[in-house]
Amino acid sequence: MSGTSLDGVDAVLAELPAGGGLRVLAHAHLDFPGALRAELLALNHSGPDELHRAAMAGQELARCYAAAIQALGPLPPVRAVAAHGQTVRHRPEWGYTLQLLNPALLAELSGLNVVADLRSRDVAAGGQGAPLVPAFHRAVFGKAGVDIAVLNLGGMGNLSFLHGDGRTLGFDTGPANALLDAWAAHHLDLPFDDGGGWASGGTVQPALLRAFQAEPYFALPPPRSTGRDLFDWPWLQRQPLAGIDPRDVQATLSEFTAWSVADALKRHQPGAVELIVCGGGAFNADLLRRLQARLPGVVLVGSGDRGLPPMQVEAAAFAWLAAAFVRQQPGNLPGVTGARGPRVLGAMYPA
Ligand SMILES: Nc1ncnc2c1ncn2[C@@H]1O[C@H](COP(=O)(O)OP(=O)(O)OP(=O)(O)O)[C@@H](O)[C@H]1O
Ligand SMILES: CC(=O)N[C@H]1[C@@H]2OC[C@@H](O2)[C@@H](O)[C@@H]1O[C@H](C)C(=O)O
Image (cartoon, rainbow, N blue to C red; front, side, top):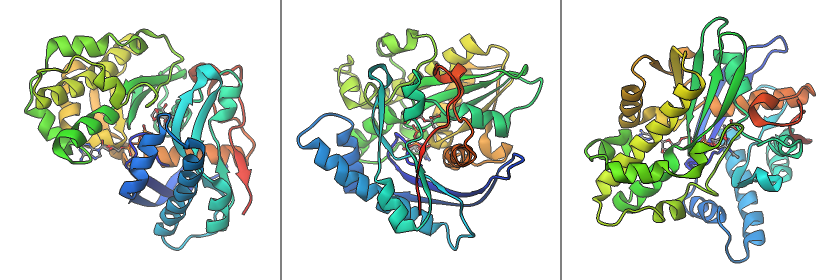
């Protein structure tokens, strides 16, 4: 799995018994080489010779994925590799979502079956193609009779609502780390603001926060999903930032992310008693503190305390989706994505 924060690749070796359940046997993370990260970031927006560059980046990604698989150590017999690829365009309203990867090359390099392109069938059926993890969250974190929410803080944020009565809903809340990382990189020359330490010393600017909140995406009803197509550096540059201390901008971005999650939770699952947090944002203490302040009645729990560490959840989720493909079972939840019905997700490139 490599997500929209573009930090690198997370791989897990997962055991998925036919009767249900999941056991992660190994985890490896590889940072993207700097040049690849910069190219993937650039490919999120149109530019010169982008078809050639996308094809080259897809090959480089396949090599990174193969290295991540190798970093898992000696492997038992593996049924399939779930390979998400790198989202560089997400335009379900135009009938497509695009994850760069050369899955044929990954099959060649790894000698394993590769299941890729896990989102496009849902989009073909009229869905958003995202988020796909709510079904997995239900399977691993759900509890009958208890309202639980699961929050992924990746480049973008997404919430799953695991209602006690068995209903599962979810959608993308908006940007999570993508804008925080971009601003920190620009002003601190660091890949991210570790623990949110820089943001925590800033002062939230109410007028700027209101400008962020005025983005029409936040008024959309579900099903909804988003990406760097909208929330990226160009979006930030359109905001009224002039004359504001950069540290206050970072604090305001952090508060904005906390607001987008808390507002979504209050509107869609006011009875939630527990919020399980995963994704790299789970290590941002400043962001979690702001979120807790906006959700006084909700207990925030790291996903590690519920059996799956924050950096493993997404990779495990896509392994689970690929297992559904191997069994020719649907992976999407039409009530979440808006697809016309359940669909088998993905395509296999044989070993
Ligand atoms: N110690 C930390 N302090 C603050 N932020 C952190 C820390 N560690 C990781 N992060 C954040 O988490 C990000 C990586 O998160 P993750 O790998 O979950 O995202 P992703 O999978 O790329 O995104 P998505 O869920 O959108 O697909 C980093 O880019 C950084 O912003
Ligand atoms: C198109 C795409 O890659 N979307 C990602 C992204 O990262 C977070 C959010 O935006 C979510 O919609 C999705 O990933 C999660 C894991 C999902 O599909 O459930």
